[in-house]
Image 1 (cartoon, rainbow, N blue to C red):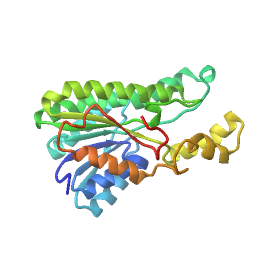
Image 2 (tube, rainbow, N blue to C red; image 1 turned 90 degrees about the vertical axis):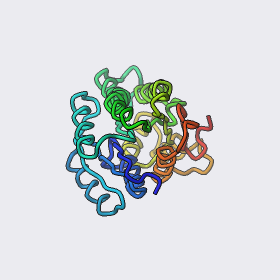
Image 3 (cartoon, rainbow, N blue to C red; image 1 turned 90 degrees about the horizontal axis):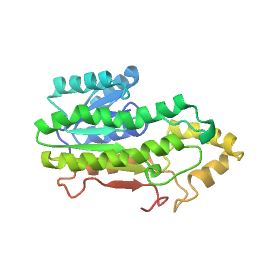
Amino acid sequence: MRMKDKVAIVTGGAGGIGEAISRAFVAEGAKVAIADLKLDAATTTADVLTKMGPGAAMPVAMDVADEASVNAGVAAVATAWGGVDVLVANAGVQIVHRVEDFPFADWKRVLAIHLDGAFLTTKACVPSMKARGGGVILYMGSVHSKEASPLKSAYVAAKHGILGLARVVAKEGAAHGIRANVICPGFVKTPLVEKQIPEQAKTLGISEEDVVKKVMLGQTVDGEFTTLDDVARVATFLASFPTDALTGQSIVVSHGWCMS
């Protein structure tokens, strides 16, 4: 088991990519805090994963855009399990508009959840990692950390920002054994992506089929969505990698959509 007894926090861990990563970590023997805005969903997921084993899971209520909520959640994990070894800053939201139509409140919400959330959870976890002699921080970026698409100005700006944050954390954390990397998936067919299909079809004036085939998957090598398992495998690899050879990096998981 590559992560036996490691303590991990996965934000947005109750469903989608976060749940898949949490499941993979528990299967490798980790203790995983399912940190989510929806405590009921986090509790359900934690119960399922604990029964699955061989690791364990606990639910944590957390609003990643609220510093007090983040600090309280991280403190609860440290109290229960002694500290934090791995952080997966995964929580996210998507709102699409053309730039000139983008409500400022929506812009701020997207950046708060993605970028502020990554910063606040990092800030809260680093002291524990230093005390434990090291740790791993994985940020959920996107192909949109490197590319751009219409209607996604806030999301693309936030995901580009995460690259910069990760690189600084990799530099600052190196002396303390802390590594930081960014996972950059292509389109994963989660509820977040499924919601975008009719929205983009309406805004772009094309069919939902064309949104999928041309907008989302048109640049892949096989016309396939990135899967939850694809992303979870990469997260497990990075979380368990034993040296500083992989830090400050962005790993693209996109079926060839982006090759940088």
